[in-house]
Length: 126
Length: 372
Image 1 (cartoon, one colour):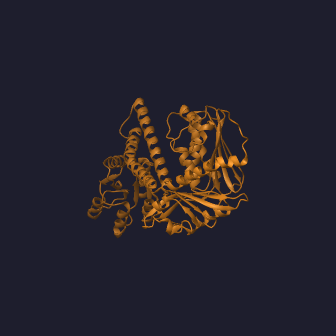
Image 2: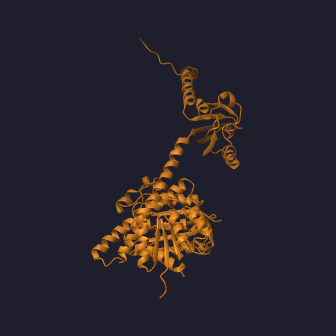
Image 3: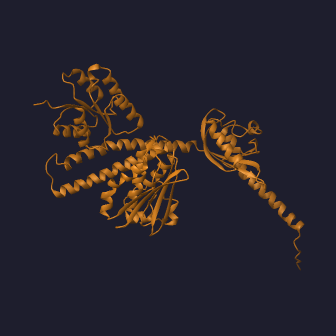
């Protein structure tokens, strides 16, 4: 039996983190959830099995999605991990800069359903 | 004592009116001199002939330093050259009034925002005798506007977090992810979900407005096929229209050229006008969309057979938070922001927006978009 795909959820809002964790688990994913960018980077450094994808909130208390992407792209082993940016800001500059740094998709949380998030994750976790 | 009425001769009239004219003149002079707005009178070349007290108060330059100089040279010239060329063309060559806003600088180097109105005074032959310029320091007003816009933007972003949490938890409940629900529970959750979606829409509208008002709205203009854009709306409107047994007719002229517009924003314009037409029209009526070319512009009209808008309300209809009486009567819910946003999007895209309406007969909302 194939190993379930692992998703690293980085979201500082407890409720949104719980909602993502619940839906992704119900959809058959394994979920590692972090509230801070630093915590997520530490997890990536220590883990033996890299996640199959990352759901990343743009505004985190300790860094922005841009900062996180920059750090993620600075290590060769992390470069290929697909990132879905989930955000509540649709300011042009956050969208463009994140996508230019290699995020697969920029999703506005209020515009997308959890089912949409699951569909996109399935697409990128191959 | 007898009184004799003497016929009023020209000399008599002059004698009687002279002190009055002088008194009036003095009154006008005092009013202009002490007005809180900056008032300047120049000759046809823009050379200052008169400056009231407020000029010194606002710009910091005493009359001795500005009389005989060209208006605005001391405190203006901080904006693009084209702005001043346009102003000069309007007042000098077209002899039209000018109304605009300038970034100026005081004598002490401090920047300030001025709202300016400049009018040519013409002689009987239509030649310019003087220019009268009135400027108001609106720095504080604009700062308050900016802070208000920033606050709306910040508050709206903050609101999106709890709204998305509600959206996602409701989605799981309604999808049965956490077990079966009774019909009544499902219906209630659907109502909560619909209210939440309304709040999301309102926050999105407020954010779009704050972006437009602060000049941060990015128009992502790409060559767009309007025919495809408009016909694509039919499917989305179907459930709304079916619920009221309404018919949508789309009449688009053949060979419509492509236009360079932001399709997301213009789609929002059509959707807003069409959903309004559905909401504010009775059952079994027809809504028609016309799109055609006229004088180098693409004209779109959304025509309904709805309740119409009273003539006294037409000038307010595009104002922020304004809702027509007929609209409130037909549908109590509504923010009064939709048409304000629509007009702002059209004007930011280089077009204009107008309304024709007859109470009881229906309304036609039209807008133009430049072909480029």
